Length: 331
Image (cartoon, rainbow, N blue to C red; front, side, top):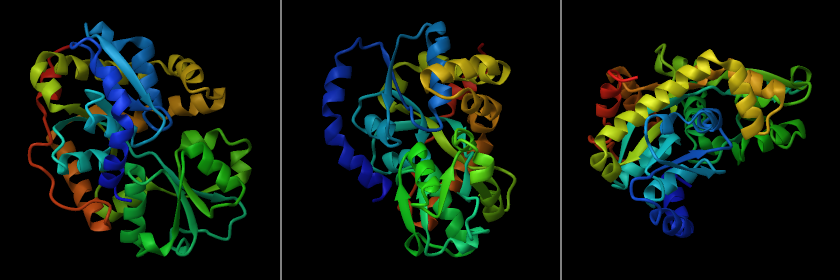
């Protein structure tokens, strides 16, 4: 199922959420993020340290256990802002003429292709005909994974069985050898007992992407997306949103111990898993929207389109740099 199909399918199920959230104060910023994936740490730090509130914003956080949750919530007007939103899903929303604007790149791909330590598979070109675990269709990580397999090794989506699931489940499938390989973040691998002896890394998606694009820039997989009406009605607050997110990014880079404690509580992580997340903070999270970032995002759209993950054209008005550019003059 393509990302835009996932969005449509989930809209009806979000009806109750819309009713519940639209009755809240009109000035409240409804913020949604995925709490089972790459955006967990960034969101947990934003909440725990109250960076939005410190900017004078009234905030209601909405948590989603599924990668497509924030995307469908934006489509249903159940949230005003979602960060760490699947890039593929955000592109699909704009193509469906949902009134949203992308205002920042927030998450960088940080995933590895992993196999059991005793697997006969030693390179990605041996994955044809295998079972490969990835995040659900609609995840930008899966978009990147399917794209690099097709472009670098000629292994198209129909050449292997894609097994979808959240990362802890995929790690379990891998250990039980229910899949031959899985795309996992280093933070997930670190939480597998005796990972060094049980699992083996074949490649990183970042390196494979650079090989495919012949560039030094890794792809973004998570973005901050705002509903157009909220952005239009609250331009000064939109700037404060970006300021708060930039402060959270800096805090995480400078306060690893605090990040570890926040993640242990919010994500029920082990000390080791949270520590690895802290180590990878700056390689996973960012808040940027320079012209070069937008160029990378546009290039990613074309890659996803070539791989069959997306279709159609990218709306010209999807990217709104104003909040990011204005945030540079504030602290």
